[in-house]
Image (cartoon, rainbow over all chains, first blue to last red; front, side, top):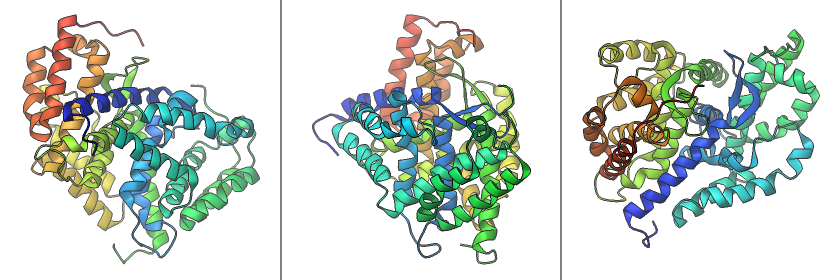
Length: 209
Length: 209
């Protein structure tokens, strides 16, 4: 813990970060919710993602039930999308936008995590970098949950978001199979099944919101 | 880990729980967001609450910077409001509704955590009970963050939700001072200051949503 700030000075900076984070609730994604079919926002997605991590950790790649640093994965889930406050949400299948995504998001990480006391800013940035780099079992499992989440919601809403953007089953497989398998093979087996079922039933149109 | 279900049978139950959890995004609270001033929902609140836990843990009651089981507190934050899927959100200052709240929520906990494999259902229920009982440092720190969060958002929106429901500064102090102090004295010092500032400036009306 950094010793150059008093506890109350640290708290003041931490609260500025918490206040800034409230803006993530206003960033909408392409994914629709299973019930109302309104567009999901990135804050509630981050919660659902973290809940998946804590619930599904036993399925992480490696020996079944092996120990993963679940706290680190949950922290990644909680902070990973904060950069969207500046950089916006980038649709998974928007290839053009995704090309410049990392640079935009890295600038946002600098500013947003920079609101925190220095030691925490470094820790949060390291978690964000770890997720981006996809080298550790923790980062790979996090990515598997992050990818499965919108697939699940899309399947629960008859693939309406895929339909809207003309996303084929092949593109979904191409974009997600390797990443989800690397983090949690059982989650890819599950995903593959629900995607096939959804396309077999036929995609529906999004309800008007 | 329970051995009477295969990994894939466990996964099927876990995914039913994750699907059910999506409904929490539809449960709205009295609190307004700082930017759009729309009503917050309980899923995005749970995320913000968990982010506060991970960011503010050093301020937990006890020796400054002492070790708290942060993973357990974050898990409490992530699952605590799931009962609202059945029981709805209970406004902090609705005394009549709060009287029967625990019983309603305990029934919901039974059903919703009961979707999980038995060992996890027990673990999640134990976390929920621990939070409710407010006996451990982890549960108390969780409650301090859970209470500070809407206070913060109310202050950022000129106390519009307090104004709407005729909540006085005295009632806010009465309801929150002891709970927040027990979990994190520094967070109550912060809360007290922003509440006083907000009432001194004068409460504003909620913008039409």
